[in-house]
Length: 148
View 1: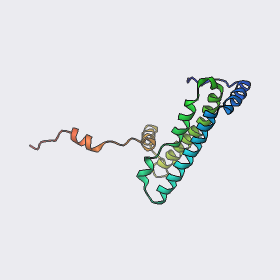
View 2: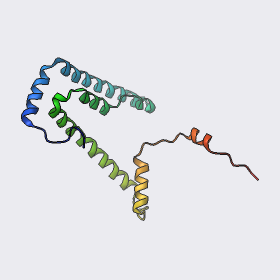
View 3: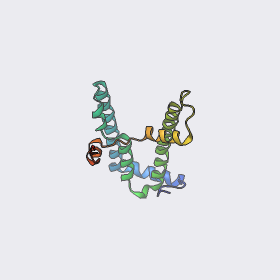
View 4: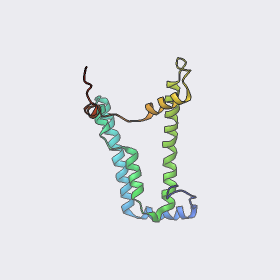
């Protein structure tokens, strides 16, 4: 279990929200986050329009920016952090779940309906994992086979 697991106290949450709204540093941090997220979205749209797909990978990850901002908030606002992380995790877990089922349906179609559960599990893992082998390194590590 994480440090943020548990029940959120509504009265304490309301006090924390009122307190943090008074703090200019945190209000400006969230305004800065909003501006950064909008900028990243704009850059992503421009790069996609110009078919610069590899450059999109170099942009900051929006979810990471959001979580970094929430992690920067002190634990004196623990109820607010619990609530925020709870809400944020809903969308990520729902998306991942839908992505896995979509990929599973694609893999196990009417032409491949005889896949065993183990084979299907292996195929789904390969499909949803972002692993990319370093072919150059693997090739240099393989010992050349001598002909007889």
